[in-house]
Length: 490
Image (cartoon, rainbow, N blue to C red; front, side, top):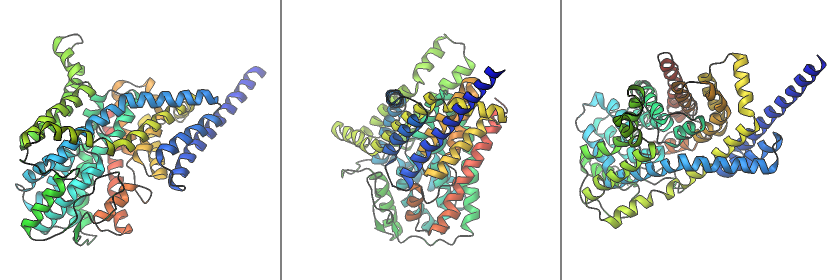
């Protein structure tokens, strides 16, 4: 009996130490990012050092754990982010995004424009990072609002919702990829479920909420396009131009869109609409076909083997890059040197993202190796708390504290990763989505995206909180409810 009591005391002391380590490690990251304004890459490295030291890991073990996590994350997630950025670069540079937007907007009645903007933003947001998508769509949003005499937020909120939902829930964006890698989730299945959950999120946070909030915030049309935030190198700046006549608006919107990553060479021909849509959707379709094949075809059959290879994320995205080089490069008149310049030029902008993701992978691995994940798993069992809800809550807490959706996803995935071992494949995929949804909760003043939206739309802090912050919260909550609904039927 005394032996059992001693073991209980020892276990209790160990758990207390791990809890302290986790709190101090995460607190170090939060304070470094929010108070001392340290770059998240360095903050995650230092936070991992604090976590490992307090958690009882030897210095050598902490270093080994961190570097191993960095290598594993870059090898799996970093490659996919780079390939996705290349497709996005060609889409932006060629004017393909403008082609898709124009085709939809020109053929939609005024009262359906908010729905069209949400759908278009979701489509072109598949390969584009959120910041680039905002830059591309801001001139179009302002143009549409002016031409149709609709409130800016009625058109702008659906566009922002479409971009944000894709950024948080659908690969190949960094957040979903990190969660998938950390949890060992199936990418194709996560993509399939993510697209299902994304639909109600875009509808409710976009056209529905946009219609409601546009009646309560009287936002004047900004006098300039892209006259807000200064370019810090993390994302391209849109062309600055006073809004003029309709013809001038069209030219400037097209220029701002097609030259978001431009180095000065004009596009010779506009890419075809069908070719652009096929290019954007090809990686998604290939990964979805693989997921469907895994659910419906017997292993070892010829078709299943072909789809298993074609739908492998790196193969699917590589196929998308190669197709984009022709449909968004050769087809618009670019030579080989120009195409190579665009593809290569898309990589420097994501260097910061790759470093943060890599350091986050190291931080996550230290969390796991120190035993924090196992402790959280045991606590969840004792509390009888649903794993999906737990993942969402952890991500929400870190999101509110750090302001970074990527940091929230990385840290939350590392904390709840041990829970994935006891879950089936579908539930693990849904856990990745629950974490992604939580990472979007209530963007506020410690989030760079908050200021990006505020400045581009010319809003006050209060107006941005009432519109953008509430929109993000709707996406997060509806995302969790969608995940729980899907979990009830799979």
